[in-house]
Image 1 (tube, rainbow over the protein chains, first blue to last red):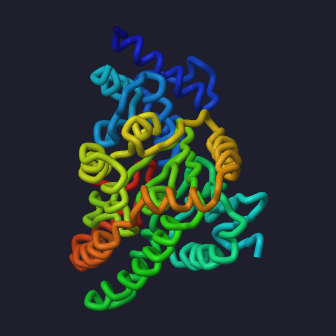
Image 2 (cartoon, chains in turn red, blue):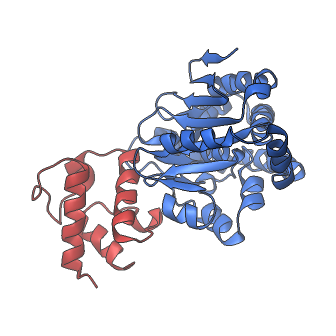
Length: 80
Length: 267
Protein backbone atom coordinates (compact mmCIF):
# COMPACT_ATOMS: atom_id res chain seq x y z
CA UNK A 1 0.00 0.00 0.00
CA UNK A 2 1.37 3.37 -1.02
CA UNK A 3 1.57 6.19 1.51
CA UNK A 4 0.04 9.56 0.64
CA UNK A 5 3.55 10.93 0.28
CA UNK A 6 4.45 8.24 -2.26
CA UNK A 7 1.21 8.82 -4.18
CA UNK A 8 1.87 12.56 -4.26
CA UNK A 9 5.41 12.04 -5.59
CA UNK A 10 4.12 9.67 -8.29
CA UNK A 11 1.46 12.21 -9.33
CA UNK A 12 4.12 14.93 -9.58
CA UNK A 13 6.43 12.66 -11.60
CA UNK A 14 3.61 11.62 -13.96
CA UNK A 15 2.56 15.23 -14.54
CA UNK A 16 6.15 16.32 -15.16
CA UNK A 17 6.68 13.50 -17.67
CA UNK A 18 3.32 14.02 -19.40
CA UNK A 19 3.87 17.75 -19.84
CA UNK A 20 7.60 17.36 -20.54
CA UNK A 21 8.80 19.36 -17.56
CA UNK A 22 11.95 18.74 -15.52
CA UNK A 23 11.35 16.30 -12.66
CA UNK A 24 11.34 18.36 -9.48
CA UNK A 25 9.85 21.43 -11.13
CA UNK A 26 6.42 20.72 -9.64
CA UNK A 27 5.47 20.91 -5.95
CA UNK A 28 2.52 19.37 -4.06
CA UNK A 29 0.89 22.74 -3.42
CA UNK A 30 1.15 23.97 -7.01
CA UNK A 31 -2.07 24.92 -8.82
CA UNK A 32 -1.77 22.63 -11.83
CA UNK A 33 -4.11 24.68 -14.02
CA UNK A 34 -1.91 27.74 -13.52
CA UNK A 35 1.43 25.94 -13.44
CA UNK A 36 0.79 23.73 -16.48
CA UNK A 37 -1.63 26.00 -18.35
CA UNK A 38 -3.71 23.02 -19.36
CA UNK A 39 -7.05 23.03 -21.18
CA UNK A 40 -10.05 20.72 -20.73
CA UNK A 41 -8.76 18.04 -23.10
CA UNK A 42 -5.36 17.98 -21.44
CA UNK A 43 -7.15 17.64 -18.10
CA UNK A 44 -8.92 14.52 -19.40
CA UNK A 45 -5.62 13.17 -20.75
CA UNK A 46 -4.03 13.63 -17.35
CA UNK A 47 -6.99 11.89 -15.71
CA UNK A 48 -6.48 8.89 -18.02
CA UNK A 49 -2.76 8.91 -17.32
CA UNK A 50 -3.40 8.86 -13.56
CA UNK A 51 -6.11 6.19 -13.74
CA UNK A 52 -3.98 3.95 -15.94
CA UNK A 53 -0.94 4.36 -13.68
CA UNK A 54 -2.74 3.73 -10.39
CA UNK A 55 -5.22 1.20 -11.79
CA UNK A 56 -8.21 3.10 -10.42
CA UNK A 57 -11.24 5.05 -11.59
CA UNK A 58 -11.36 8.67 -10.53
CA UNK A 59 -14.79 10.13 -11.38
CA UNK A 60 -14.66 13.70 -12.67
CA UNK A 61 -16.98 14.91 -9.93
CA UNK A 62 -14.49 13.80 -7.28
CA UNK A 63 -11.79 16.01 -8.73
CA UNK A 64 -14.03 18.91 -9.71
CA UNK A 65 -12.74 22.00 -7.93
CA UNK A 66 -9.41 20.34 -7.15
CA UNK A 67 -6.52 22.40 -8.47
CA UNK A 68 -3.44 21.36 -6.49
CA UNK A 69 -1.42 18.16 -6.68
CA UNK A 70 -1.66 17.38 -2.96
CA UNK A 71 -5.47 17.34 -2.92
CA UNK A 72 -5.47 15.38 -6.17
CA UNK A 73 -3.16 12.81 -4.57
CA UNK A 74 -5.53 12.56 -1.59
CA UNK A 75 -8.45 11.82 -3.91
CA UNK A 76 -6.38 9.11 -5.60
CA UNK A 77 -5.24 7.69 -2.26
CA UNK A 78 -8.87 7.23 -1.20
CA UNK A 79 -9.38 4.97 -4.23
CA UNK A 80 -6.30 2.79 -3.75
CA UNK B 1 -17.26 8.38 -55.98
CA UNK B 2 -14.29 6.73 -54.25
CA UNK B 3 -13.27 9.66 -52.10
CA UNK B 4 -14.59 12.87 -50.61
CA UNK B 5 -12.90 15.90 -49.13
CA UNK B 6 -15.22 18.10 -47.15
CA UNK B 7 -14.92 20.94 -44.69
CA UNK B 8 -15.50 18.77 -41.62
CA UNK B 9 -14.56 15.27 -42.76
CA UNK B 10 -13.03 13.25 -45.57
CA UNK B 11 -13.28 9.69 -46.72
CA UNK B 12 -11.60 7.36 -49.11
CA UNK B 13 -12.51 3.86 -50.27
CA UNK B 14 -9.62 1.52 -50.97
CA UNK B 15 -9.28 -2.27 -51.13
CA UNK B 16 -12.70 -2.88 -49.62
CA UNK B 17 -12.29 -0.48 -46.70
CA UNK B 18 -13.70 3.04 -46.33
CA UNK B 19 -11.61 5.33 -44.15
CA UNK B 20 -13.75 8.17 -42.79
CA UNK B 21 -11.76 10.85 -40.97
CA UNK B 22 -13.47 13.51 -38.86
CA UNK B 23 -11.48 16.72 -39.04
CA UNK B 24 -13.43 19.72 -37.85
CA UNK B 25 -11.89 22.35 -35.59
CA UNK B 26 -11.76 22.54 -32.68
CA UNK B 27 -13.13 19.23 -31.44
CA UNK B 28 -15.13 17.54 -34.22
CA UNK B 29 -18.39 19.01 -32.99
CA UNK B 30 -21.37 17.59 -34.84
CA UNK B 31 -23.36 20.61 -35.99
CA UNK B 32 -25.12 21.42 -39.24
CA UNK B 33 -21.87 21.47 -41.27
CA UNK B 34 -20.73 18.01 -40.21
CA UNK B 35 -24.28 16.67 -40.37
CA UNK B 36 -24.57 17.73 -44.03
CA UNK B 37 -21.33 15.94 -44.90
CA UNK B 38 -22.31 12.84 -42.93
CA UNK B 39 -25.54 12.83 -44.96
CA UNK B 40 -23.48 12.91 -48.15
CA UNK B 41 -21.37 10.07 -46.78
CA UNK B 42 -24.29 7.74 -46.01
CA UNK B 43 -25.94 8.66 -49.31
CA UNK B 44 -22.92 7.06 -51.01
CA UNK B 45 -23.41 3.71 -49.19
CA UNK B 46 -25.54 2.27 -51.99
CA UNK B 47 -22.79 2.78 -54.55
CA UNK B 48 -19.96 1.81 -52.20
CA UNK B 49 -21.53 -1.26 -50.57
CA UNK B 50 -20.87 -3.84 -53.33
CA UNK B 51 -17.13 -3.36 -52.98
CA UNK B 52 -16.94 -2.51 -49.27
CA UNK B 53 -16.30 -4.93 -46.41
CA UNK B 54 -15.52 -2.46 -43.65
CA UNK B 55 -15.55 1.21 -42.73
CA UNK B 56 -13.31 2.85 -40.14
CA UNK B 57 -14.34 6.12 -38.51
CA UNK B 58 -11.52 8.01 -36.82
CA UNK B 59 -10.48 11.54 -35.92
CA UNK B 60 -7.63 13.69 -37.19
CA UNK B 61 -7.93 16.02 -34.19
CA UNK B 62 -5.41 15.78 -31.37
CA UNK B 63 -6.70 14.31 -28.09
CA UNK B 64 -10.29 13.95 -29.24
CA UNK B 65 -12.54 11.68 -31.28
CA UNK B 66 -15.50 14.05 -31.03
CA UNK B 67 -16.92 16.43 -28.43
CA UNK B 68 -20.40 15.53 -29.72
CA UNK B 69 -23.22 17.84 -30.70
CA UNK B 70 -22.20 21.43 -31.38
CA UNK B 71 -23.61 23.05 -28.25
CA UNK B 72 -22.44 26.52 -29.25
CA UNK B 73 -24.35 26.28 -32.51
CA UNK B 74 -27.33 24.74 -30.73
CA UNK B 75 -27.42 27.57 -28.21
CA UNK B 76 -26.93 30.31 -30.81
CA UNK B 77 -29.60 28.87 -33.10
CA UNK B 78 -32.09 28.40 -30.28
CA UNK B 79 -31.41 31.83 -28.77
CA UNK B 80 -32.10 33.48 -32.14
CA UNK B 81 -35.72 32.30 -32.25
CA UNK B 82 -38.71 32.60 -29.94
CA UNK B 83 -38.94 29.92 -27.23
CA UNK B 84 -42.07 28.43 -28.79
CA UNK B 85 -40.25 27.87 -32.09
CA UNK B 86 -37.20 26.12 -30.61
CA UNK B 87 -38.52 22.53 -30.46
CA UNK B 88 -39.31 22.49 -34.20
CA UNK B 89 -35.75 23.44 -35.12
CA UNK B 90 -34.25 20.95 -32.68
CA UNK B 91 -36.56 18.19 -33.90
CA UNK B 92 -35.62 18.82 -37.53
CA UNK B 93 -31.93 18.48 -36.68
CA UNK B 94 -32.50 15.34 -34.62
CA UNK B 95 -34.53 13.68 -37.39
CA UNK B 96 -31.64 14.24 -39.79
CA UNK B 97 -28.91 13.03 -37.42
CA UNK B 98 -30.98 9.97 -36.47
CA UNK B 99 -31.29 9.07 -40.16
CA UNK B 100 -27.49 9.26 -40.47
CA UNK B 101 -26.87 7.22 -37.31
CA UNK B 102 -29.39 4.58 -38.38
CA UNK B 103 -27.74 4.33 -41.81
CA UNK B 104 -24.34 3.78 -40.17
CA UNK B 105 -25.86 1.34 -37.67
CA UNK B 106 -27.34 -0.83 -40.43
CA UNK B 107 -24.65 -0.29 -43.08
CA UNK B 108 -24.18 -3.45 -45.18
CA UNK B 109 -20.53 -3.65 -44.11
CA UNK B 110 -18.74 -3.73 -40.77
CA UNK B 111 -18.22 -0.33 -39.15
CA UNK B 112 -15.39 0.33 -36.71
CA UNK B 113 -14.89 3.44 -34.59
CA UNK B 114 -11.17 3.93 -33.94
CA UNK B 115 -11.28 6.15 -30.88
CA UNK B 116 -8.53 8.16 -29.28
CA UNK B 117 -8.91 10.91 -26.70
CA UNK B 118 -12.28 12.23 -25.59
CA UNK B 119 -15.39 10.62 -27.04
CA UNK B 120 -18.27 12.60 -25.62
CA UNK B 121 -22.02 12.89 -26.09
CA UNK B 122 -22.86 12.81 -29.80
CA UNK B 123 -19.33 11.57 -30.50
CA UNK B 124 -20.01 8.54 -28.35
CA UNK B 125 -23.38 8.14 -30.07
CA UNK B 126 -21.58 8.02 -33.42
CA UNK B 127 -19.17 5.40 -32.06
CA UNK B 128 -22.11 3.42 -30.64
CA UNK B 129 -23.75 3.31 -34.06
CA UNK B 130 -20.67 1.44 -35.29
CA UNK B 131 -20.33 -2.32 -34.92
CA UNK B 132 -17.09 -2.19 -32.96
CA UNK B 133 -15.12 0.37 -30.98
CA UNK B 134 -11.35 0.03 -30.95
CA UNK B 135 -10.02 2.45 -28.35
CA UNK B 136 -6.65 3.93 -27.51
CA UNK B 137 -5.96 3.29 -23.80
CA UNK B 138 -6.05 7.07 -23.24
CA UNK B 139 -9.60 7.35 -24.65
CA UNK B 140 -12.42 8.53 -22.40
CA UNK B 141 -16.16 8.14 -22.87
CA UNK B 142 -19.02 10.18 -21.43
CA UNK B 143 -22.60 11.26 -21.80
CA UNK B 144 -22.56 14.67 -20.06
CA UNK B 145 -26.03 15.69 -21.31
CA UNK B 146 -27.90 15.27 -18.02
CA UNK B 147 -25.51 17.76 -16.46
CA UNK B 148 -27.06 20.35 -18.78
CA UNK B 149 -30.66 19.30 -18.28
CA UNK B 150 -31.36 17.12 -21.31
CA UNK B 151 -30.60 13.62 -22.57
CA UNK B 152 -28.35 12.31 -25.33
CA UNK B 153 -30.29 13.02 -28.52
CA UNK B 154 -28.44 11.20 -31.31
CA UNK B 155 -29.68 7.71 -30.38
CA UNK B 156 -27.38 7.18 -27.40
CA UNK B 157 -29.67 5.70 -24.78
CA UNK B 158 -31.45 3.14 -27.00
CA UNK B 159 -28.13 1.95 -28.43
CA UNK B 160 -26.47 1.80 -25.00
CA UNK B 161 -29.43 -0.21 -23.69
CA UNK B 162 -29.24 -2.50 -26.69
CA UNK B 163 -25.56 -3.20 -26.25
CA UNK B 164 -24.70 -2.96 -22.56
CA UNK B 165 -25.80 -3.76 -19.01
CA UNK B 166 -27.89 -1.50 -16.83
CA UNK B 167 -25.19 -0.77 -14.24
CA UNK B 168 -22.89 0.81 -16.80
CA UNK B 169 -25.67 2.56 -18.72
CA UNK B 170 -27.07 4.22 -15.60
CA UNK B 171 -23.66 5.14 -14.19
CA UNK B 172 -22.70 6.78 -17.49
CA UNK B 173 -26.00 8.68 -17.79
CA UNK B 174 -26.76 9.66 -14.22
CA UNK B 175 -23.25 10.81 -13.25
CA UNK B 176 -22.18 12.27 -16.60
CA UNK B 177 -18.65 11.24 -15.68
CA UNK B 178 -15.98 10.27 -18.16
CA UNK B 179 -14.91 6.65 -18.14
CA UNK B 180 -11.55 5.36 -19.21
CA UNK B 181 -10.99 2.87 -22.01
CA UNK B 182 -10.01 0.01 -19.68
CA UNK B 183 -13.33 0.21 -17.85
CA UNK B 184 -15.17 0.68 -21.16
CA UNK B 185 -13.61 -2.53 -22.43
CA UNK B 186 -14.44 -4.38 -19.21
CA UNK B 187 -18.14 -3.57 -19.59
CA UNK B 188 -18.25 -4.39 -23.30
CA UNK B 189 -18.39 -0.93 -24.83
CA UNK B 190 -14.91 -1.27 -26.31
CA UNK B 191 -14.10 -4.34 -28.40
CA UNK B 192 -10.33 -3.96 -28.50
CA UNK B 193 -7.94 -1.87 -26.46
CA UNK B 194 -5.00 -0.27 -28.27
CA UNK B 195 -1.76 1.21 -26.99
CA UNK B 196 -1.30 4.97 -27.18
CA UNK B 197 -1.55 6.14 -30.77
CA UNK B 198 -2.30 2.64 -32.08
CA UNK B 199 -6.12 2.59 -32.39
CA UNK B 200 -6.24 3.42 -36.09
CA UNK B 201 -3.51 0.91 -36.99
CA UNK B 202 -5.31 -1.83 -35.09
CA UNK B 203 -8.63 -0.84 -36.68
CA UNK B 204 -7.03 -1.14 -40.13
CA UNK B 205 -5.60 -4.56 -39.28
CA UNK B 206 -9.04 -5.65 -38.03
CA UNK B 207 -10.72 -4.31 -41.17
CA UNK B 208 -8.22 -6.18 -43.35
CA UNK B 209 -9.21 -9.43 -41.61
CA UNK B 210 -12.92 -8.65 -42.07
CA UNK B 211 -12.47 -8.23 -45.84
CA UNK B 212 -11.53 -11.94 -46.09
CA UNK B 213 -15.01 -13.20 -45.21
CA UNK B 214 -18.10 -13.86 -47.28
CA UNK B 215 -20.11 -10.65 -47.72
CA UNK B 216 -23.55 -12.30 -47.60
CA UNK B 217 -22.82 -14.20 -44.36
CA UNK B 218 -21.29 -11.08 -42.80
CA UNK B 219 -24.31 -8.92 -43.65
CA UNK B 220 -26.73 -11.61 -42.42
CA UNK B 221 -24.84 -11.96 -39.13
CA UNK B 222 -24.88 -8.21 -38.60
CA UNK B 223 -28.61 -7.95 -39.24
CA UNK B 224 -29.23 -10.87 -36.87
CA UNK B 225 -27.21 -9.60 -33.90
CA UNK B 226 -27.77 -5.85 -34.20
CA UNK B 227 -31.43 -4.88 -34.53
CA UNK B 228 -32.12 -1.13 -34.56
CA UNK B 229 -34.28 -0.07 -31.58
CA UNK B 230 -36.52 2.12 -33.76
CA UNK B 231 -39.39 2.61 -31.32
CA UNK B 232 -37.06 3.78 -28.54
CA UNK B 233 -35.18 6.02 -30.95
CA UNK B 234 -38.47 7.76 -31.86
CA UNK B 235 -39.26 8.22 -28.18
CA UNK B 236 -35.81 9.64 -27.56
CA UNK B 237 -36.44 12.45 -30.07
CA UNK B 238 -39.77 13.29 -28.39
CA UNK B 239 -38.24 13.29 -24.92
CA UNK B 240 -35.28 15.43 -25.99
CA UNK B 241 -37.60 18.03 -27.52
CA UNK B 242 -39.82 18.01 -24.43
CA UNK B 243 -36.86 18.58 -22.09
CA UNK B 244 -35.30 21.19 -24.36
CA UNK B 245 -38.28 23.56 -24.03
CA UNK B 246 -37.45 24.28 -20.39
CA UNK B 247 -35.79 27.66 -19.64
CA UNK B 248 -33.28 25.94 -17.33
CA UNK B 249 -31.76 24.18 -20.34
CA UNK B 250 -31.08 27.42 -22.17
CA UNK B 251 -29.61 28.87 -18.97
CA UNK B 252 -27.29 25.85 -18.55
CA UNK B 253 -26.26 25.99 -22.21
CA UNK B 254 -25.52 29.71 -21.92
CA UNK B 255 -23.30 29.08 -18.90
CA UNK B 256 -21.56 26.23 -20.71
CA UNK B 257 -20.82 28.08 -23.95
CA UNK B 258 -19.59 31.18 -22.12
CA UNK B 259 -17.15 29.19 -19.96
CA UNK B 260 -13.72 28.93 -21.51
CA UNK B 261 -11.97 27.57 -18.42
CA UNK B 262 -10.00 24.32 -18.21
CA UNK B 263 -12.98 22.57 -16.59
CA UNK B 264 -16.00 23.88 -18.59
CA UNK B 265 -19.13 24.54 -16.60
CA UNK B 266 -20.81 21.28 -15.70
CA UNK B 267 -22.66 20.96 -12.40
